Image 1 (cartoon, one colour):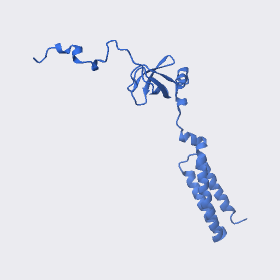
Image 2 (cartoon, helix red, strand yellow; image 1 turned 90 degrees about the vertical axis):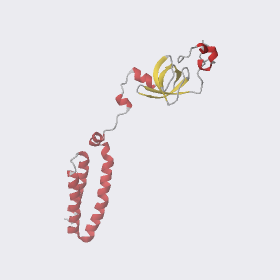
Image 3 (cartoon, rainbow, N blue to C red; image 1 turned 60 degrees about the vertical axis):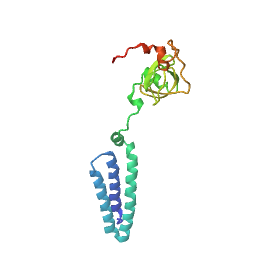
Image 4 (cartoon, rainbow, N blue to C red; image 1 turned 90 degrees about the horizontal axis):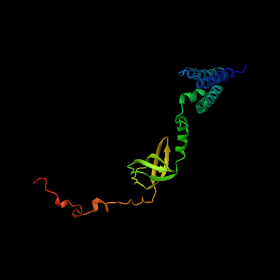
Length: 195
């Protein structure tokens, strides 16, 4: 019987234990047994094969075991145990209901509409004849200003203003009250309340 047969068999057993550790979480028991098997295999190689065979076996084991561990760790996330342990985060499609309203909201991204109210940053918008609650992307949007929907996440709609200015709203009172003179407002006839 060749002198290095048992060290090779024990080393292969240790590598199998490393693979088994990836599939059966044992709290490190199988990993400890795999390390012990590798040490025993190197010891037997020195004992049965002499100094040169033992040193060669030690070098091979020193390269093969870490390489095998790296490959097993890379393969582990694709195993049933790895997928269960890592528990990948759910995306929006897994969490949100897949009803008609959700699908219609997703199709709004990139569409244009009109702000129905002053958005500081929240307000309402009108797109394709329907009114939605929305939030601006950080700037004030005037009522009547053209907007573009830049993001839809769930039922959260984010819009930005386009360069088009809002249409001028007619003021039946004339100019803005703050731009009128005091004489035209009739405030000079008021009595001094402190007198």
